[in-house]
Image (tube, rainbow, N blue to C red):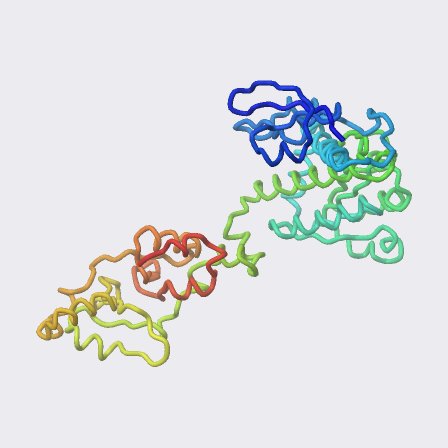
Length: 413
């Protein structure tokens, strides 16, 4: 069956209207459909505009706030195009709710972050239902960014778990309505037992807000559910605002990438944020020799059992690093069959003042240095310029894996 389709010829933006069978247009591949059967398709092809500051909020203001504005919104979408349009509209509703909430946050949200950052104990998060699930996720966010936190179920709290709340703790109580019976019932007790109660709720006009020391009002938002019932937009806003408070608190604590690495030792992220001290070969596995001996003597005295490094670190009488002699340096001597060079002072053949890493440097920074300088070995020094270990490129490649860091793929020592 032929359908009336409108096409835009991409290079010249000409508009042509004529009946065509859609599969043929796809086969031709030179026209971009803008409507099919009267259904507008820009939403399927347009991308949100962006600015240097991020998402264009003015564009987001034009997004739908609820599904209720559409006719027969509860009827099942019949076509693939209609289903995709509904899906994108739902996500847009939630995204727009978050943007509107961001614009209305005030000083109380900052105060909540300050209370969180200054907390000398733990942050105790409580909530019930979907708000409770959001709370559990926020506990994970807080804990991974340097703020000790745990979740307290309201029902368990009234049966003895209030004893888990200490006077040095700060409590986050999450409820969209601010009237959840289980949360409101323990609010006064939580405020009494803690250093402060922060309510994250839709408004300042509810029982939970009245019991709190600080209320972060996130606003009332139309849910993305066709019936306006399932918590969707409201939980998305709770999550985003909670993340925002947690991130601001971590900045107020001067939380660093090194701190982050302490809480993420596993996975590619943890490995890249590890320090060179955790990855380097210790001195017992390194080859070290004085700089005033011959090449031949250095090769003999610095020999090690097991897997050896590709370089000898050369030190002075004060055990400070003065140079490095690599397998490549030795190979160049052997290629020229210059046996006399083997009996020369190694100081004449070494690379003086080599590139080094310092104790505490991040592994990802060390890898960047090795890739940029195209070196295979990187001595690690203490504050006195004395070797404490060595990073070998084969160790890093084996640890991170090619899929984890593109720098390894392009590395050519």
